[in-house]
Picture 1 (cartoon, one colour):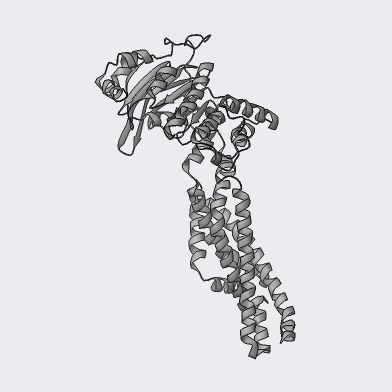
Picture 2 (cartoon, chains in turn cyan, purple):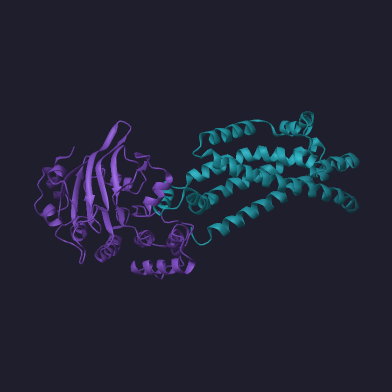
Length: 217
Length: 280
């Protein structure tokens, strides 16, 4: 029995690395897009607001799996050929960035108006008001919902199995076909591994939150 | 339009309590409202205000809630734009600027330049909760005035000493009492060295026992003299004590205006009489 577990480990380890890589890269893409689109949503410029609103509406509303298929299978017909990894990161980043943008927007708007006014009374420029006064406070509000979103994102990476990226889920499916009687154990291991990564994400978010709020709540 | 202000068109602060050594108000007023109106939708809340504040003058604005006192201060701090009329700061329009010989709506650049002369302390302090006390006070001198670290630090510490909080430099605002928070907010505004400072009901959000410490600090600053003050307040004793001139406003108009002993001693209008009777 133990020997079987040992046989699974190398494959699961490979899959784990791919899952971590896709999660990390698409989380970065999603956070950058969320920040940019969230800020654009409250911009003074109407066209920027319109653009980011359209993006949000569009990418929140389409299935991630279909988006993944589009990026990987359809774009080549338009002359854009992406590697599996790039396609996965782009699709997941675009999808989760749209949800994140709403978190960024609402967190900024939740900072009391008095903070903007005090910053203005001290004659900070509008960029300084945002960067020095409002955003640092909004960031703390963003953390818990962003933590949730990143866990969602991690779990969504299992969809890249469908464009044959050899992630955790993919490797588990391979193993299952080799060790059919142990299906329960293999998928049990899969569950546990996702759970552990999700817990690590939560832990990081909580540490960051503690660091940002240290001494002042 | 407001009859009381027409009778006495030029309040220029040459009132009975000049702060020592100041030349009488021969110069341009630091702030001048000219027929300033403010509406929210169809509701006009200020019906044409005319008011001059001389350099260094301390003016108290009293009156019932909803009389537009706070709006008057917020328009000066550029937080709200007048619907019509002109506010001049040291002779220069605040909300308008000259372009090709015409007055046009001020852009952010103009407002930024004008704001350097104006400061404000808010009812709800609005300290920056993510910065310690010292940084609340040094941030604007460093990033707005461009002072270097030591200079900003020295100025900030000097101001925090003035408000009696030099032992709280390294503390987050959440650890302070309301009175202490407001004193930090005063130091934070003072450190920018404005020509006029708006104090917008700065004790209204405080527990009664904390009001005194804040008023004492403001009184001390007032006695130093050089900065003009617009004191929007419900503290009548304080207004009497600190102000060179008291203005009573109601329903978006200035009803009565004069030196404190006159205004509190022999109120002319029924409106002011009934308002003051509530404080006896």
